[in-house]
Length: 72
Image (tube, rainbow, N blue to C red; front, side, top):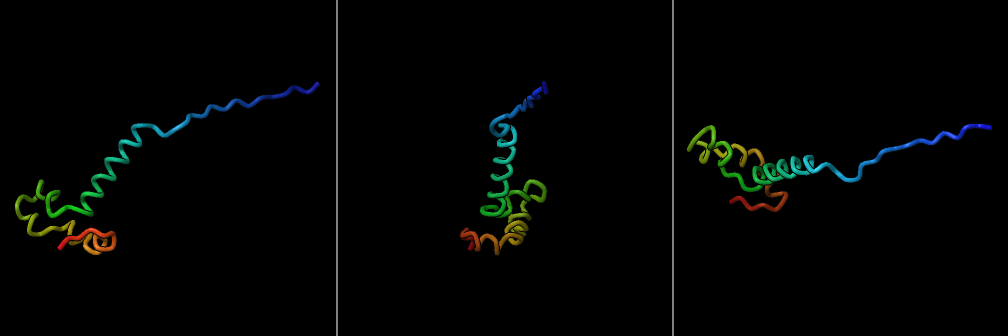
């Protein structure tokens, strides 16, 4: 008689908690930098000049308005 072969599969349910944590941190940093940053992130490197230059604000200015964030 023919032998019946069984295939065993191991499935893990769910998404790893580390991956969810990393994605939440990335989302939070991106959300803050696109929506609320007025020079705070670059002030860590550039000092007080960053509040006048507002590089991230100017870079994401049109996207802020398109997504509903008021900025001026």
